[in-house]
Image 1 (cartoon, rainbow, N blue to C red):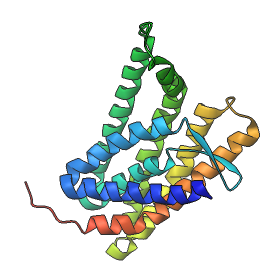
Image 2: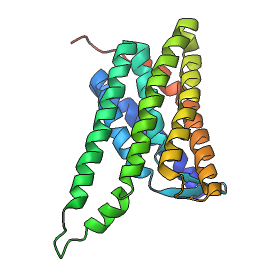
Image 3: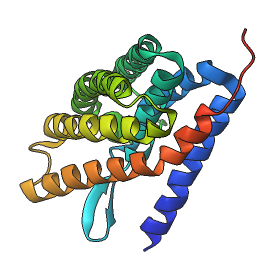
Image 4: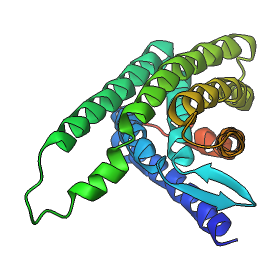
Length: 226
């Protein structure tokens, strides 16, 4: 039960920091959040935890907020800006992966103690990054497109929850299947892989539903035009 209780607090802290980032920095804060979340989520994902008898990876909460962010950008600033945010996150994920893989190649000094930890955390990065890059690229653009189509069909401000959960529900299923297949197929037994895939998708979808009030609140923020 500790992981569940701590996980609820973890989700709330993520949402609070997201709102604070947007409140303080406006639209630029949303782009910054995408960059930070995509990098940190791919570090967290190497850690597995147990909850309710299932194996799951960390990183799902932060990664889920990326969809929240691009949907908010789409809602307030339009599809073009949302696509820009997707490209923004893609670049930072690619950049961080390239830089860290090059850093791992350096030969450590005899008294170094950081290299083993870096190798442990980022050693899986090429495969995880390939899965992340592919899943991120496909699912994020899919999310933006579905959100825009749902907005045309359900344009009312009160129907935002349909646009959010409809787009995220589909795009995150695609994201989960692509990422888990590329990153973890063969690394874990079929049973563990299935647990990770199912719990990853369910957790992301629960987070997307929980984030609905957050995006309604964030949409109400007003900023002075620059």
